[in-house]
Structure formats: structure tokens, C-alpha cells
Length: 297
Image 1 (cartoon, rainbow, N blue to C red):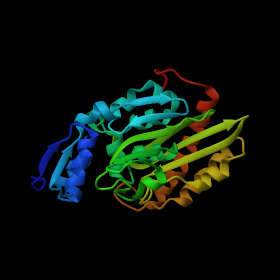
Image 2 (image 1 turned 120 degrees about the horizontal axis):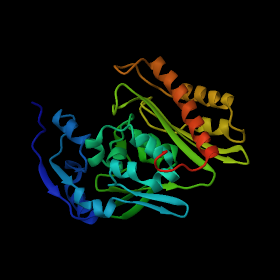
Image 3 (image 1 turned 45 degrees about the horizontal axis):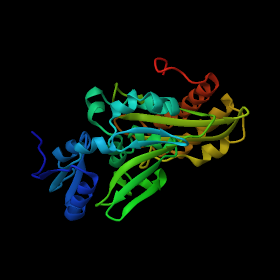
Image 4 (image 1 turned 180 degrees about the vertical axis):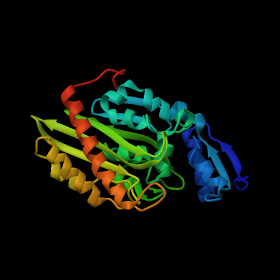
């Protein structure tokens, strides 16, 4: 049997109390919400902490999806299930429902949170690719107050983020722009598994021409980052199969996958190419077809 090393348990009742505990305990402490990533690592002794600070009681404070003019705000303790079931979020960003449908299983979706997913910073994590695609910003709170960082600034490497030892990710902000839509495609070995490769795309059209586009990949390198070269290649052109093929080629050339039990590096580059094309095509089709009902999403 694999069991974690001994640790002390604290249960926070407010964000400020959790920050105070982190400030006092320092690197010996770690926050836990869903725990589906952290606890297995602790059982394998890949992560060892003297204190676990349970923040599940903060869901009332940090579990929300709020649509405002120009942006959607998502609390860091919003559960995967809540993201999947949010009609307002799906209307603004269909990519979220696409991704949440293929994340793990109902048990994980009922407990896991968007904040936990992002802070785990796993290069194969679905919502990291989604938030990168949507050009999200992350709100981090600590003893000195709040600061806002981009997704590019948030990720510093595999399993490493900009969140300090005495800080908490409290909110994700997603900018709303007119004339756009989004999509997410994923290849996995079995339902709910980590991605072999996945791709998210967001496209904005103006008078039939792509005014902007973003693509985010997962499971094809040490970091989940956007690909600026794709954005540059697509801007100013009408959508076309040739344009999608060009974007797919750039995606394949820009990623850095490794050969492992999920497939060869060559196969993963092929998937990055193909899934980028599919995600772009789906996003454009959604713009042209207009809003869909909750049942159709």
C-alpha cells in the first residue's frame, strides 16, 4: 500500500485565513481542494508537505461564474461540473464545455476545481490549454494584496506557477470579444484519460476575415503555451482549408513532444497538426452558424 508521509491538517474558513496560514507555514504547506492530483503524488512520495490546508469551505467565496460586460470571471474553486453545466459560460466560450466533457469522470468533475487544475501546471492539463487559448488572466492574492498575471506569466515551467508560497489563485478572467467562438479537440487513449494531444482554438471574424485567432496545445512539450506564429499567419485572411492546413503545420513545427507510452513524438506532432485544424474549423463553423441551444452544445 502506498501512503503519504505524515502531515498536519488545517481547514481554512476564509481566503484571508488561508493566506495567513500559508504566510506562517511557508514552503512546508500546500493547499488542497479537489486533491485528485496532489494526493496521488503524496501517496507516491513525489510530493511531501508537513501541512495540508483544506480550502473546500471557501467554495461559497470562490466558486462562481459571473458574466460581465467585456469579461467572464470564474472563481478558482469553481468545480469542473459547474463549468460543464454553466449555460452562460458555454454561450460565451463553447471551448469550456468541449473540454469539460472529456475531463476525467463524474467523480473527479464533482470535486476538482479550475484553480487546482491550473495550479497543478501539468503540461497535459486540459483547462491550461483552454485558458491559454482564451487569453485568460489570473488573479493572485497574497499578504500584500492582489495582482493580475497573463497565462504566459502564470506558467513558469512544468508543475511551477507564478503563485508564491503565501499566495492563492482566486479568480480567472476571460475577455469577451464580439464576432468570435472557440472549440477544443482531444485525443485520449480511453475516455477521461490525460490527453495524448489536445488543441484549443479561438477565432474572431470581421466582415468574413479573421481579425484574430489563438491556438493552445497540451501534452506536446514542457509548457502549455499559445503559438503566436499561428495568430500571425491567420490574421487578415478569410477562413479556408488551406489556411487551416498552414496553421496545423505551424503547430506541428512549434511543439516539442516526447515519445512515451501514449505515442511517439512523430505521432503527437501529427495530432497537433490535425487537431489544430479541427479546432479552428469548428470555431469558425460555430461563428457562421450562430449561437446554439444548451441541448445542442
